[in-house]
Image (cartoon, rainbow, N blue to C red):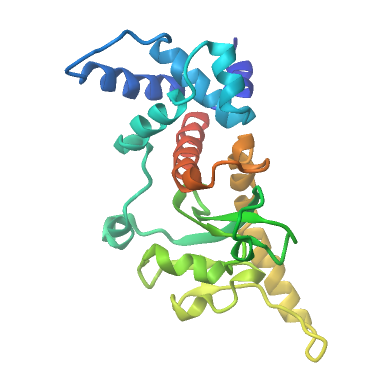
Length: 262
């Protein structure tokens, strides 16, 4: 495959695939007891994991196609998340003077999930169905994902941002949409979209401010689109217990792919 075909097939650039393969090869080399030889090579294990993220087929179908056990994907995910190259910046990094982000956008997206036994906390008022929500902190200049958070779909966006514990310097501006009203309570330089009501419609000045804010945040939907190229974050979620892990891994993958493209 050429570069374009490979990215369409796996969702990652060849350079990113090589970095992921290097991490898995290093993990195999550190094993003290090799045990029974693996049925698949390191590259094949990685390709199977990317196929699972990209197409989101069941483990049973992937196991039949590749002739291996279903847990191969989870072992690859555990090896990748343990490596520093596939982790997002730590919380303390945002407060360091040499890494001051001028404008940071916050946005959330929802993923449909199967109906759980206790369904009340997963019902989203926006989607009118059972959903899971993931929120991203994005640098508007580099379009790099800085942090992720996941929760049930019924949780409001500002409440999802607070448990992260991320504290930006005062000179950093955080941009939110209409669902992030009250974001200024946790950060002084927070700007959100003006909302109109029947009693107080928007003025011409407020509409112009909303247009400027939408223009500044225009890179945010493109980042979410790159995340949802992987069907595991777009289709009906079947593995709620590993959503946070996979959102962080796919976010790190998108950052590396973006760096290779630039």
